[in-house]
Length: 595
Picture 1 (spheres, rainbow, N blue to C red):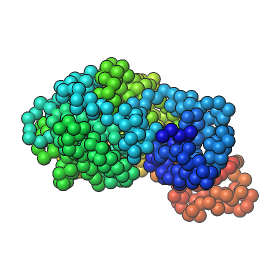
Picture 2 (spheres, rainbow, N blue to C red; picture 1 turned 30 degrees about the horizontal axis):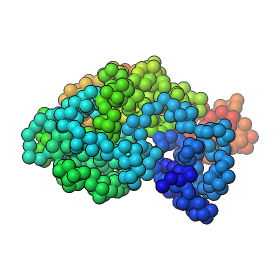
Picture 3 (tube, rainbow, N blue to C red; picture 1 turned 30 degrees about the vertical axis):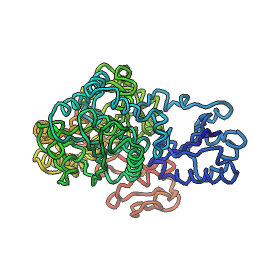
Picture 4 (cartoon, one colour; picture 1 turned 45 degrees about the horizontal axis):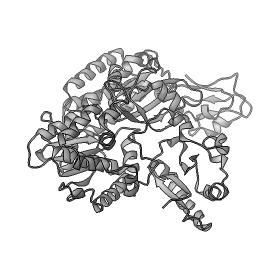
C-alpha cells in the first residue's frame, strides 16, 4: 500500500529514553483525530545516528528532518506539515530548509558518511521482516543457497578484504575457511554482541535498527561452513536489542528464512539468544564460548582457535555484530564492490560511536582511511564551548590516545597501531583541554582491573599495580620512579597476559606516557594537575581585587568553607574545602580561581 507520507520516528535506545515512543503514539493519535491515518504511515525505526539531535522525526517523501522533537509537537507537525503542507521551521535541523526540499545529504553530519553497515538503520521498521525484504533483504541468502558453492562464498569474502570489526582485524574469509575445512559432525556460528567498551553502542544500534542483517549473515555462514546452529551472545543490559532480535527470529522462522528446510533448499539453520551478565572479559572469544556453555567466562590459551575447536569442542565461526552486518551486502553486491571502499589494507567502512567533548555526538559510519580531522570537525562539528581539542581515545580501555599532531592521519588498522592505539570495536571519545590524561588513564585502568577475570597473574596483579601508581600520582604522592615501574609493568603485561584484555590493558598507560609524560611529571614534581581535574592537587582561592562580596559562593558552598560580610571580600577555609568547584562555577566576577 502506498501512503502520501511516511513519518519515521527514531526508535533507538537513546531516543526511546527521551520519549520517542510517546512521540510515535502522539503522531498516530493526531492522524486518527484528523481521519487521515489510512493515508499516512508512522514508522518506528532504528537509530538515525545523529544522537545529539534526538529524538528525530523524518518525513518522506520531502525528507524533512525534525530534531529535538517532543510529544507535544505532534499536533503541530500533523496539522502544519501533513495537512497544510507547511514545514515547522522551528523544529527543522536547518531552519532555511523550510521553503525547499530538504535532504539528509545537505547535513554536515552525514555528508562524509557512507552507510553500508547502517544502510537500513533509520529507514525501516526493524520489527517488520517485510520492510527488510523490500530493501533486498535475504536475497544474499537466496544467492548462497541456490547459485553459489561454499568455496565461492569464501572467495567473495576474500575479494572484499573484509576484516573483523571486533578489534583484532583478522581477515574474515580466513576464519571461515578454517572452520569450513575442519571435519566435524557439528559446527557452530556465533555472534559476539557483548559490547562492553565505555561509550560504545555500535553493535546495540545495529541490532536495534537492522536485526535481520545479522540473522541473514549467520545463516549464510552456516551454509558456507556446514553449521546448522547459531548463537547470539548479547548482554542482558540491551533489552530493546534483545526484543527486536526475538521478533526478527520469530518472523524469519515463520517465513521459512530460518529453521528447517530454508526456502525449500534442504538447509536447516537455527538461532538462539544467550544473555551475558555484563562481564567485559566475555567479549574475548574463548571466555564468551565458555559462558554460552554455562561455565564461568574465563579465557583459555590459544591455539587451538575457536574456528577449529570452539563451542563444545566443535569448529566455531565467531564474529562481532558489525562484521556480520557487512556480509549480506558483500554477497549481494560482490566482493569487488566492497573492496573499492576504504584503503589498500583496510577495506570498507567503520562504524564509530563518537562521544565526549564533541558538538555532534552520535553513531557514524565512514570509509576506512577517513582522517580524524574529518571525523572530529566536519562530521562531529568540533569541540564545543570554544575549548581546544586535546586528544581522541580510540579502542576503549584497550586503546590509546591520538593527539592533535595526528589529526590528519587516515584512520585504519595499520595507522592506529603505529600511533599506539587500536581500532577496537569502534568507540571514539573526544577530549578537550580540561581533561587530565593521568586521570583519564586511571579511569580506564580502574575499569579493566574491575573487569579482569583474575585467572592470570600478569593481568590480575599488574593491572592493580598500575592503578595503584596512578592513584598515587593523582593524589600528589607520586615519584619519578613510579613512571619507570609503570613502563616495566606495562611491557610485562603485554607479553605475558593470557588474553587480549590483559595484554592491552596497559595501552592507555603506554599511550599517554608517550604523548603526555609532561603531565605525569607536573603531578609528581610540581604537585599540580595542569587540567585542574585531580582534586587532591587543587587549591581554590578568592582574589581580593575581584571579589565584591556578593555572597553567592558562600551561599552555594555545600560545606560552609566560605565566609564574609556582605559587600566585603570573602575568604575560603582550605581545611574545610572539598574542592567540588561550585564556588568557581557560580562566581560571575571570576574571583574564585583554582591553582
